[in-house]
Length: 473
Image (cartoon, rainbow, N blue to C red; front, side):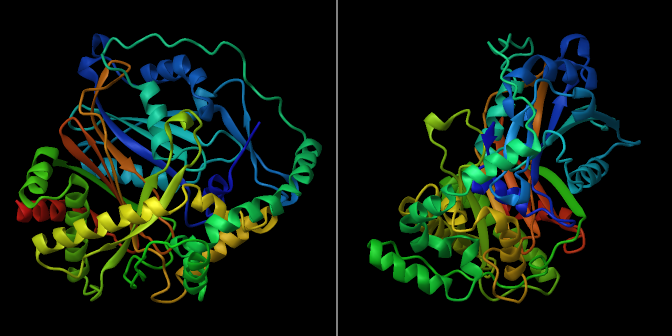
């Protein structure tokens, strides 16, 4: 069995009746390139049957330690129940993007069954384009962005003909543990907690203001004092997320929208102004969000604060799955009207963020979580986020913006060509908006998810993004 890290467990702990911890992607596939022009649930099920044995996370089932004495474990099952995990549906006529987005929002709003491996896959037919949609849904406790890409790499091919995948040499399934065995594991893990905490102090304490714990009064001062005692440190701006309409407690319901920008246009903008592709993406997101806030008479006179997930996974950690990320904070200059000025300020801010990232320990989030005893871990994690939304000016972040570089060559699933791949990420209390983008085949695929009550008109952000990019050009 494999034990969850404290960071993996945090994504489970944050779940409640209103917020979920799974992520996914909406792949649009062209069935005409598949053998005999056929692509649907039957072909996807066959693919999963062939390649599932090479994907251990799809067989991991959660096993909790009694009384919460330690973090849970993954128990690897012998087989995947594809009849449960792979599902099919069809859009009603005319099958447009709005209908597809509504289906994705409904599916992603529903929690995963913790009694089973934490993933589902939906094959959705009936889109007016003739394309078939494949929506994947997997818990963040299992994967981060890069380990999710590893799974997709095994399911996708470079040619329509596909490739042979060798089955694993041996059966790696775990025997199902009894309650007494799990209790024994929990008791054995108790002495490890103070050791983990003491090891985490030197690296985590000086940087706690860069985590969700920074919302608590005095934490910033404590971290800065500790930083001076243990290292020279890097100057870190004190970013405070102002209150907006999407900064409160979220509802159980979601809105989703998706669309594309041309990568060539984004590169033209970055070349014209001497910045980077990521600078342009973040800046046009700031411009689009600014327009939404203006229309709703909710624009703060200070920058918003964006959470920017950054992978710290190294090459030798390939195939280990789980989470190896930092959650960085960057100012989002929604208070700047001029698009070029906003881009220049974004460029400087992201350079500063890169410098700060170099000064932070790679395992900061895991080390910070090690301060919390496992027995009260779930309650403490929920309390932190509840505290961050209890009054204005206390949240660590306003929204999530993530830009994931992808391949610029065609990929195929069971022979069907991947036309687009729109990320579908997660929102939490205090962060009711998430904008994630992945580049692929000359375009940038945006997946935007928001709380249904806070941003019922989230679909207006896509035309705003295009218009903000045009302003830079």
